[in-house]
Every structure is written in structure tokens, then in C-alpha cells.
Length: 80
Image 1: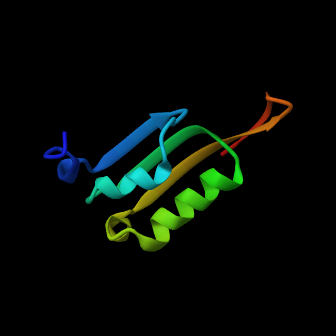
Image 2: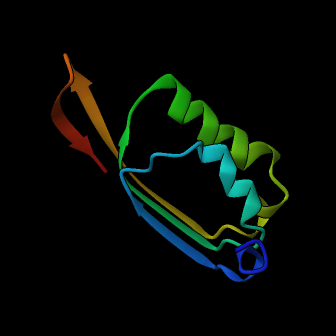
Image 3: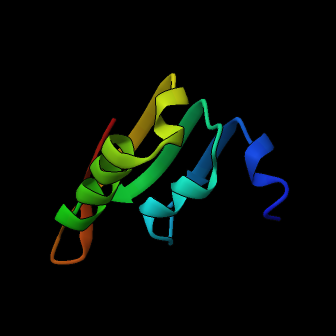
């Protein structure tokens, strides 16, 4: 798969279960869509760290995010 990563231009994921900083393996991403991301300080800081520090982030044209806010482990609002 490592040979494929540089060729991936668009990435869409439903409920990502991985470290968002792993996007640094995708060198030429143009579009990122993440749906139903748990809105936590960790997830937001990982996204910001990727955008601020990754060399590949300079290629990004569009990021679409859909966050899920939870209270007592029950989803109540979806923001887009």
C-alpha cells in the first residue's frame, strides 16, 4: 500500500478510527472528507497539527468535516 499512497488524491472516511495525523502518509491529497468525527480536543488538535506541519497539506484544496457532539455517550447534534 505504501506505493499507492502518493497517488491518492481524494480521501473519504465514515467515522474514522485512526490517528488523523496519519494523513501525512498521503503525500498528494487534494480533498479530504471525514464524516461523523467525534468532536474532541484530540481530534481537532490532530487535524490542526496535520494542516500546520505536514508537507502534503500544501496540496489540499478542500476539507469537509462532519462532527458529532456527544453528551453522556449519546449523539445529540451533527455539525457540518
